[in-house]
Image (cartoon, rainbow, N blue to C red; front, side):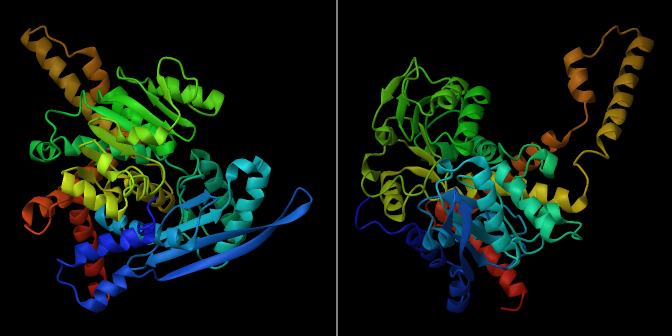
Length: 475
């Protein structure tokens, strides 16, 4: 990256400053919202392979305007305090934008999880969790982590079990963390949630012809060409849903060991199967392998989906980006400097705090499920089916009595008579959340002369809601 490039944390602060400059907030309130409330750094030892290994971890709490605070835990070798605090700030704004009742937090452990066996990772995770739990930095009512880069359902199951062991009488113990497996109190649809949210965000964007025209595009989402950087949990689900359900052609994929290109489009399930079997994309048949995968960020496409690390679009490559529409599936993939260059070029950026909010939205549903101790749909599903069946039977009876001789299509009947299960309710709630959040941004984007992009609009909406919460507390 360019030596003049601001850090990730500086980029978040610069974007914050740009938004509050046009907001009517007192200097003191601006500063209160901007700063990170606290960061806990822990260094702990674990005996592995006959020796003691010391690990460094972080848990930052950016804002407690609402509690509990919410934010994932990532495992990566380059985790540092500034990064964790920047991510915690983004969580504050993200939760406010999509109206989940949480403050912002984030955690990280300096570790390459690929270097350890599963039982070793469990020892490390449990000890890290122990250090956080005993300080109430994991708690259903105060701080609720979730998976992030390098972690998943497995790590969340270890954490919730560690919390339950240390809090044996807490009836809400399962709500101490989200993103758990179903058999540990998880919720249907959580693994796919962030990728599904990216899909719903693009669907909502393409419902507005004025916004599509601003990106120098026309028509619907179907037929658009996309490049996806990162086929982890977020990128793989987004690519799969967009190609299978919305008619998007994924022409390029960027991974750690290079990239793949195919004008005709890549078969995402086949690519994922290949990666699972071979550890990377190199050698995948039916596509052109590009050793310098990052160069595909600059390839021609309609939609660019950076879904891996922060800062991949920066001062060194921003002027060569050809995509007219970028949706930030990762946190902070476009730096503040690159953002300014892209805006001057007329590129429309759907910002990270909105685009990847599907994860925290469904985490909210999981948290509510754990606190209510009942699966969504359990009490109403069969009642829905019974009411629908009454209507269908009455219509068919009337048809027979009147000699009309018509019957309802069997497929329609089957779908209409089926009550909503948990997965359908989760997807419905996520879709509704992404639509309403986009409309709140859009209202500011098109309704104010001093706002010319979606990122600034998102910050204004989010900061305004955080400010309202602090004012209600008497600040």
